[in-house]
Length: 206
Image 1 (cartoon, rainbow, N blue to C red):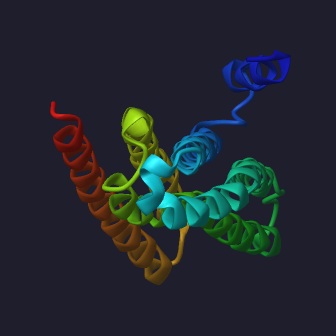
Image 2: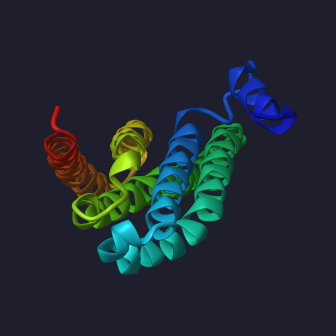
């Protein structure tokens, strides 16, 4: 660990509302990608796990794109929250200003819904890639793969909280759409993680 990591944690722990839960969801997803990449590299390291080499190579590519993108998603969530706050600070001294303010709140809330929603979506996509790998990955690193799956589900859950907190400000159609979509993601992520954990426990012999 280094000072950069501590700096991030200190920013999260500060009185500032950003980075908050949505940004942390993005960082958690980044950790999941990192662990998947590590297990993939350890699988490639030995011909003993040759059967898993192709999948491992694919997952390394996915993870190398996913890690920096997770940071971008975390930053997007911070920016979206700031935009919502700025919208609420707009003047409301007359009907025109109130109308403009209300529109800005709706638009910025949609942005603040979509930012964490994308984190949840990416978390699910990563989970979908893992069951196949569990069966052929380096057996000595399976607990790290289990951790990656758990983190991916956690990232989806954390992101869902930030989706739900913003949907009340959306137009009805968008509110219903995103509440339904995030619920579906959560349910699928939970089932996938449970499947992955059971597969890993079975392979280890726990």
